Image 1 (spheres, rainbow, N blue to C red):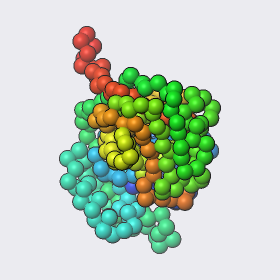
Image 2: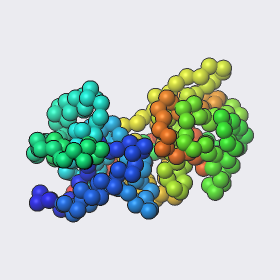
Image 3: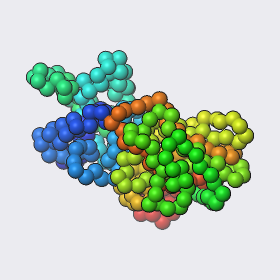
Length: 299
């Protein structure tokens, strides 16, 4: 509490299945009264749920980049929240090896047994150093959607290509492994990015999303950019212009006659449906010069 008045985050987060326990972060905040990014409330700001998903693999670099961009410098780690001992050992080793993190203090005490379900005890406090980052490229040269056809495992797939943001393709609740939306172009196109629009309540985005493309009859898995720069671009859009926010899947330009967006093997009964108001494709993805590096920008 005496260290700073800047924001603080408790990690790792409880899973969506244990979402009610996110109220713990609010309770702990009454001991330091510093801003926190996660909690339980009747209204969640647009980036809340996506940010929680984007830092699920803390302390991976992408999660640290997001906290860095948000100005979160104090990280309180609750090791017992990693229930699996092997995973706990792996994540603690990663914390020790991360040059951007500096241990401020480690605690050895444990709370009373009645708090076991909260997985408290043996906390560690880290300071996160700021680090210059790269910017994700911006999709450009959108492919016209006339003549597109859509199909899916469930729901009205045409809602994702009808140019009406009030309608959306939506899966059942919860979203399940194997759910997919497929879009076919009238002719082969060069694509460098695929974008999935957000809509209120901003929580119905895909978990464990996979992308495939097809030219003839064979589908090919595409590895899209999912690092700190890409995730920050999404969080920033949800913060600053949520009505225009999109998840952008950036890739090396490739030829495709069709794209398939599908969910992998991860699942959680507490996840919401997956909804796409509009799906878009772009021929290019341009890297813009950071504002601080532009000629004439005050230093």
